[in-house]
Structure formats: structure tokens, C-alpha cells
Amino acid sequence: MSLTSWRRMAAVISAAFVLCSLLTTGVHGDSLTVLQTPEFVSFQKGEWPVSGEKIPDLVALTMGFSVQEDLSWPGLQAGPLFQRPRANVLVVVRGVDSLALPQSVASYPLENPVPFTLDSVAETVHSLFAEDTPVVLQLAPSEERLYMLGKANAVFEDLPVTLQQIRARLSQDGSVLASLPLNSLSRNAEADLLFLSEVQVLHDITALLQRHRHLAKDHSPDLYSLELSGLEELSRVYSQDSPQYRDATAILATVLQKFGEDVYGLYGNSAVVEVVTVKTFEAPLTRKSRSILESKQISNPDSPYNLAYKYNFQYAVIFNIVLWLMIALALAVIAISYNLWNMDPGYDSIIYRMTNQKIRMD
Image 1 (spheres, rainbow, N blue to C red):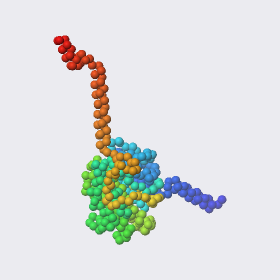
Image 2 (cartoon, rainbow, N blue to C red):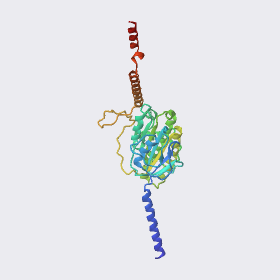
Image 3 (cartoon, rainbow, N blue to C red):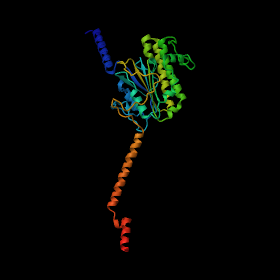
Image 4 (cartoon, helix red, strand yellow):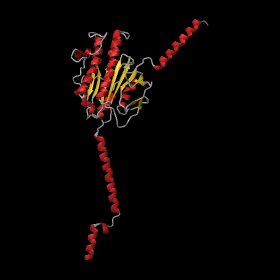
């Protein structure tokens, strides 16, 4: 066999090895990156893949909530029972499989990137801390989708919601256009403005949180879920090899790093900040539509779906009062019955004692 044949065979074997490695590790390269986390929430560094449909359960566990199915994933270690982070911030970036984030706690490959929402986590936060009115904010600027609960209605009432409002915000004082190196990005192109609008929303959220610092001091955890699709639109319009896409990717990585640090500091180093990067979702997301600035009310427990009653925080108090009162009454009845059974009527009862004295006197 000639030297050329050997080289061809080696090239074929090398290509086959690369193909096998891609099939085993995943072609998409999507990832879950933990930017910030408090000391009592322990993420272990490793290459353990996490499924996209398990992201809501992962967020719930980091906030100290229980889930229906155990998450057998070694990346998250069990933490203290009586400590929970004050906030969890999840940012989903569509259109890119990974971002060059300068600093992160850990990063994990994301497999089965199906669409997901944090509606279940939001319902848990709202039901358990309804009286404390926690902040629940779910926002997708490109789809003009906004869902707020609790104090978020008052805190983020000035947050631009529609694309028209955000683009108007870009022309006002304090806009990110004055501080960002746009390079190849244009202020007039629709795709570029969509990306810059999402960056502006991140900046406005941190600005509003700095104005309402009291939110980080209450006892109820806050939940933030943001979905950014500006990079996906840039890749569709310009392609991923374009300078616009490369510049936007670098800008977003820097902005997300600063956004995570600001939120982490505002919540007293007690917040979990995650970034999920997804090139494309595998299935379309079927979602119940919600109106702008909708505030969900507690539903009627008499539901035709046989749902359980909503949890009331007074349940534990009432249960303990009834339980210990019943135990105390039972012990009192036992003690009284025992004393009556062993009582000597001639000495222990004043009635019989007086009767005996009267008989003797007569």
C-alpha cells in the first residue's frame, strides 16, 4: 500500500473519530452557565449534561422548593435546610450555543433543548409567599410578552414593554447606545435595534432594582425569567459569520456578566444567576397567552379539575394549636379519672366528711 493510501486511510479514520465524538457529546453545544451563586448553593464543576425540560426543577431546587420528581443530577449538591437565596435570575439567550463569559461558577452542556417556562416555579413562589408579595417577572421583549406578580407590578411599572416603547427608550437620556461600542451594529436596522432593545431592558431592570433596594431585604424570594432572541434575529438576517453577529455576541457576553454581578450585589450576595444559551429549540413552545401587565388572582378552590386547596400559612399554626390542646385535654381527663378512681370518700371528699361529722353529733 502506497504512502498516499495510508494518508487517505488516516484521514478517514480521523474524520470518523471526530464524527463519533460529536455524536456522543452533542452537536448543538448548548449550555447552562451559572454566573453567580451564594456560598450555600453548591454547584459542582463537571461535564454533566442537563436536560432542557429539567431546568424549571433545577431552578426550584436552588430556591429551596420541592419538585415532583427527584433530579438525579450530580451538578447541584444539597444545601442547608434553613437557607435559601433571595432571588433567582434565569436568562435564556436564543441564537447562540455558548457565550464567552469572563467569569462563571460552572458550565454544563444542555441536551434535549426543548422550550421551557418557569410558570410552575412562579406559581410555587406566589402560593407560598402570597402575603409577602414577592417579585415575579417573566419577560420576552421580542415577543412583547410580560408577566408580573406581587411587588413587580409597582416596581417595574415604568419598564418599557413593547418594542415601540423600548426603541423610544433608546433615544432618551441614559440609553445604552451612549456607552456600548456598536462597531458594525446600526441604529437604523430592525435586527440591530431588536438586539439593542434587549440590552436596554437588562440595563433598566438593574436600574429599577437599585432604586428599590428594599426588595432584597424581605423574606420572600424573587424570581426573574428573561428570554432574549436578538442574536437569533441577527444570525437570520446577517448570518453567524457576519461582523454584526460577532460584535453583538461580544457585547451581550459583557452585558450579561455585568448584569449578573449587579443583581448579585443588590441582593446581598444571595442570588443565583443562570444563563441558558440555545442555538435553536427542538420543538415549538405551546404557551397560554397572557396580557400585558397581567396580575394573576388566586383561583377558586372549587375547581372542576379536582385540584388541591391552596396552601395557607395559618395551617401550621392552627394545626399545632388544635393538636396540643387535644393532648392537654386528654392528659387532664386521664389525670382526673385516675384521682377519682383512687379517691377515699371519707377523707378526700368534703361532702362525705361533713356527713360523717353530722351523724356522730346526732
